[in-house]
Image 1 (cartoon, rainbow, N blue to C red):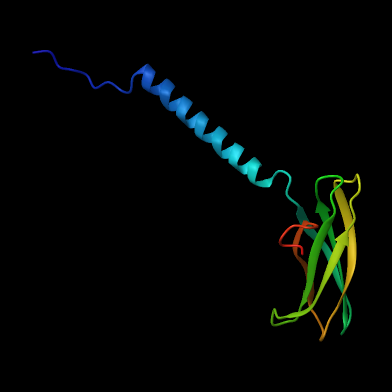
Image 2 (image 1 turned 135 degrees about the horizontal axis):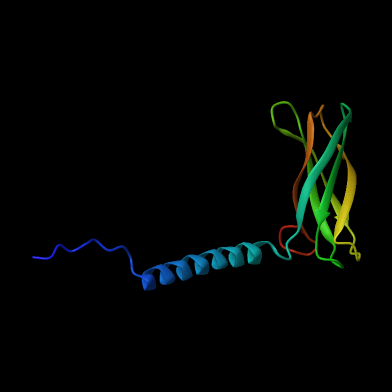
Length: 127
């Protein structure tokens, strides 16, 4: 009686598996790009506590050229409570990336300043 040898997956199974993985990776990349392209992104670049009542916050915004943006910047105290908030309206221009420095007036001494959100002017979140 012949002894059968265990065989691994066939060549067809390897090809189909490789194609399925490639399709999954392509789909993940497409979903990731679709979720972020055309959206406003921002990055805090600096903050400076000028006094018990004032913080300067620096940040950069990347947006679609020609679109106005509204950003909400907040200052927080040592207990992470918000002690000041301001909105910075960035006018439309041909620049995709814009560097900004804004002043946030506070009710008490802040220890940090950050951008809370940025969105295109006229969207539901920026109104």
